Length: 345
Image (tube, rainbow, N blue to C red; front, side):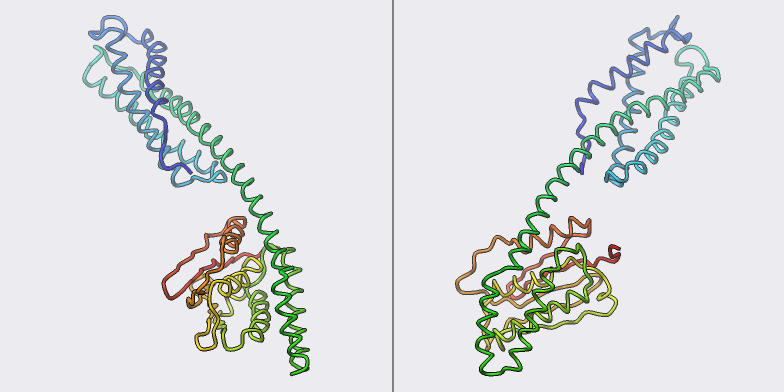
């Protein structure tokens, strides 16, 4: 998206050329070409001033609607409104100039009705030509930018899928889970059976996650609850989870594995101690799901490429949703995920 029109050369060269073309076309068609006091170059100077005034005014209109409707999908709306506004302003300026010339007898004669109609035609032609060049250049730049962005997002999507696969077959998670299961079997067989069921539920969801682009918050919360029960067996009192999500939010959408990635991120970067537990909170808040945790930085920080957070942000970009918000203070880490109101069919 452009913040300003970078067209200095275009204006410096274009305005004199357009003024000269109009001057050559219309100069000898009016009586002003005969005995006027200004001559050819004098009248050209007036034409140039008027052209610059028209150009800058139309340019302001183009810039205004470009900022208001910058997207490629808004092209039709942007062009329609720009043409209506720019044409109206250009016609007013052109007719006003002719009226001033007419009232002051600047050229030594009065303009007939044909002169006013000619002024309207010139204004329309000016807007179509200049506006068309601006919009054509902008459209090509936006199309090229969109193509590059699509390619970049495609690569990010592939990277996200690879990271999801890493989560699915994470050997450390499986090793730790099997270790916890081995210790449970002789001590509490019933609880070991429950653990196996939770582990099966977790891996079933992980294997199905890549088949969806969006899942319901309710499904994600159920998955996180199963995932948390496995973590609870492993970490005991060193970890806690608070779920405070209203029913309306549970029916909305969210990219799959998003909450699990944030829980995993919290575990990776914080110490987990029974006397100072890591508490993870998942709550609904003003159209968002907010995941936060108290900060208990590890003494030896784990290396991080922030791939999990980047993957979540990439998913939201791919879905053309509002961006993810990440806030960090000395005592809390917080991620705000926009809820997806319309679920794909």
